[in-house]
Image (cartoon, rainbow, N blue to C red; front, top):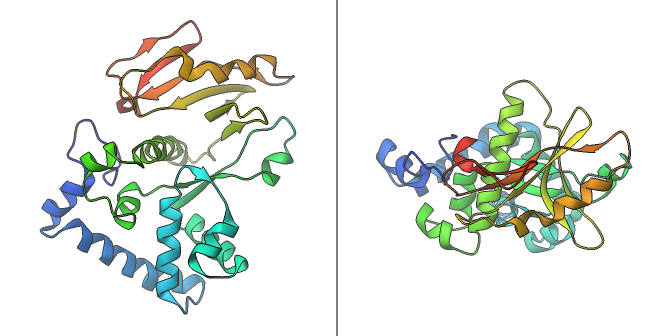
Length: 248
């Protein structure tokens, strides 16, 4: 598990462990982290003349983790031009702080046209930026589900990056509002995954998976499941499982 995760089944949360291990509160740690990031990384890429607006932009991005990207709204909230928001977002992507999850379409060209989902991969930093002081409060708060989804996505991304592989992952959403949080493409098979911060998963949570049963060639529906807080690996049916997030 990544040390900065705010969800960890076997370790202290990052928000509490950082304060203890470094001898000062996590707020000071992340404040210093951001200053170092600006001075070392950002200024080497682009001249950020208004650091306050850049910090505000990062905070707005963190608050939108696990949401559809709306670059116009990000620009409006930070009071910057859209072109500046696009440039600053590209910096965060290049720094591996943000990942843009593309939608899946049989028409490959559409994957680059339709809006991606935004994930702020450093969940400890995102919690600091959005004002969540402890993992316990965050889990029960309005953003608990979004942070849990972000954590799971980040762990899956890292598993590929560590092997030197570009993550073959997408999300699914159609005009009927049927959604699948994550699709992993492997050898022409799409493996659907739902991500829920619950210890009581239900079969209805994966009802949208059936949209994959009619995929045209060369795609086929692969095994899937729901990643959640249940404490053991069990099967819903022959194709889908309940997967504890601690397995990541």
